[in-house]
Every structure is written in structure tokens, then in C-alpha cells.
Length: 299
Image (cartoon, rainbow, N blue to C red; front, side):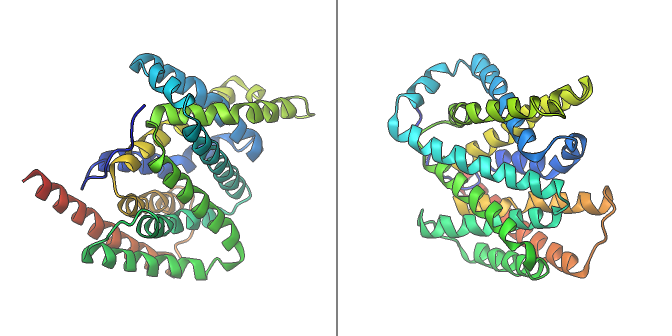
């Protein structure tokens, strides 16, 4: 079994960027599966993530790591907690999007990086330099502007931010590599997912997988779109300071907001424009600082 890796400046940046770009573009995919209730769709995401994990384990010969993780009681306990948190996160996010509260969902993921910074500094005792604290201040101001305009849905946003923030902290500190960890999380959630899928299949509307062949393929694609960014995220979390990982996460909801404006035709409000300006300034400053650290380490 792999021990947790020490964070190093700039390490895992490409993994973090890959995960957050995929998550940022996810609303485009979500529009193709809106025919399914939120809970049923999450159940199928879990079901189809497992064969994706098994396929990668087969290609990479990762079965030994999986067996080692399953044999460690402390690791299993941590992954039970992380599996529950990510399931809560998925259900809340899907329900919010399907009910038209996209803004509240996006706000949750704007809050999440600040949760990461708080957990990184308070729990992991990470230290930020002056440039990074300036970036955190800019981002906090931007999120505050958005939160002021969405007070009635703040509970949704906070539940998303806290569930994913604590999930990431558990995955960072668990003594398990990304792929075995995701596989075990999926196995933990699988019985409940199969029960939910069977319950919907027995109802009047039938299974969402049976709506049409094309719809079934799109739902199955959810396994790849679920597993890939989570693997990248877990890998980045093991290689980066948790505070730094959180700040890069601002990329994901910003992409979703840009999609809302350019693809879904939502109106750009002044609060959103101010938020964009502050958060993109924070992202640019934080990425620049990571690049400087990487070059210094290479030198």
C-alpha cells in the first residue's frame, strides 16, 4: 500500500487542472441526462464507475494495492467516511442543478476552495506566503459578493463546500493510492446504488437506462466522467498542499459560470462580474506563485 506523499511545490498541478476543467464542463453533460431523477442518476454514476475502475486496475496491474487497502482497517474506515461524503455531494449537486438552482451549486464550489485553505492551515498546519494570502483575500471578497446575493440558498452551497472539502482532506491523509481508494469507495456505495436503481426500475416510469439506447449510453458515460476527475483530484491532493489545491479549484465553477453565460444564455449580473474579476486575479496570482516555486525547486 502506498503511504501518503509529501506535498511539493508545483507537484500535481497538471492533475488538479485536469480534474477541475472536467468538473467545470460537467454542466454540458448534465443537460443530456436531465430525464433521470437526481437520486437515480447518482446511483447509476456509482454503478458505472466500478467497471471503469476495474478496467484501469486490470491495465495497470493494481490489484495488489487494492487488496492491501482492503486489508487495512484504518484505511477502510476512512474510505467509508469519504464515500458517504462524496455521495452526499453528488446528490445535493444533481438535485440543485435539476431544480434550477445552478447558481447555488456553483456558489458552493466557489466556497469550497476557502474551506480547503481553512482545513489546510488549521488541520494540516500548512503555511501560506504573502502572495498566497493576497490571493486568498481576493477570492474571499469575490465569494462574499456572490454569497450576499444568494442568501436564501446558502444551505445548499455550504453543504456542497463542506462535504467536498472534508472529502478531499480524508483522501489526502488516507494511506491509499487514488485508484484503489476510488474503487473501494465505489464498492462501499454499490449496494445502496443498486437498490436505488432497482427501486426506480420497478416504478411506473421504469429505469432511466431504458429510456432509449442513446440515453443509456450517456448515463453509462457518467462512470468515466465521475471516475476520471476523482482520480486526478486524489492524485493532486497527495502531491500538493491542500490550500494550494483549493485555490486552483476556483477554475471549475468559473468555467461553469462562463458556460452559463455563453451556452445557456444566462444574464451576467454586476455581482458576478465583480466576482469573476476578483477570483481570476486570485487564480492568476496563485498559479504564478506555484510556477515560481516549481522553478525555484528545479533550480
